Length: 237
Image (cartoon, rainbow, N blue to C red):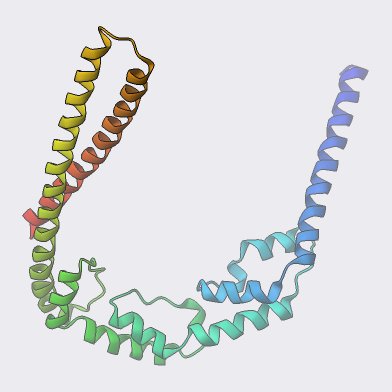
C-alpha cells in the first residue's frame, strides 16, 4: 500500500469515527432530554412492555441516560387504566380482539372473564343481524359454541347492507357515465370550433374539460371496482 493510500485510509477512519461519535452524542442528548415518564405511559397505552421499546434500547446501547424510575412510573400509571376489566368487557361487546400482554400479572383473569362476558353479548344471533346491517366486518372472535348462530344472522344482515350499497354504487356509476359522456361531447364540440378559430379562451376551456374528464374517469374506475368487489362478496353469501 502506498503512503497516499494509507493516508486516505487513516483520514477515512477518522471521519467515520467522528461521524459515529457525533451520532452517538446526538442520541445521548436526546436520551437526556427525553420525557421518560410520558414514554412509559405511551408504551402501556400501546400494549408494549418496557423491554420491547426500541428507543430505550438505543439509549442503552449509546450509554445514554435512561430514567428507569420515571419510565416505570409512567408505565404503571397507564397500565392500571389499560388493564381495567370494564375496558375488556367493552372490547368483547364490540367483537374486538383481546390481547394485553402487559396485563399478564395485573388483573388478567378478571379481564378475561369480563371480555368473555362482553363477547357473549356480541355473539348473540340478535346482535349478528345488527352488526351485519351496520356494515362493520366480523373479525372472527366468537367462540365455536356461538359462532354458527351469530354468522347465520350476520350474513343475512350483511347481505341486506351490501345490496343497498350495490344500488348506491350503481346509481353513482350511471351518473358518472352520463357526466363523462357530456364532458367528452363538449370536448369534441370545442375541438371542432378550434379548427376554425384559434382563440386563447377555447384552449383554456379545453384544458379545464380535459382535467374534468381525467377526474371523472378516475372516479368512475374506482366505482366500477367497488361494484365488482361488492358483487363478488354478495355472490358468496
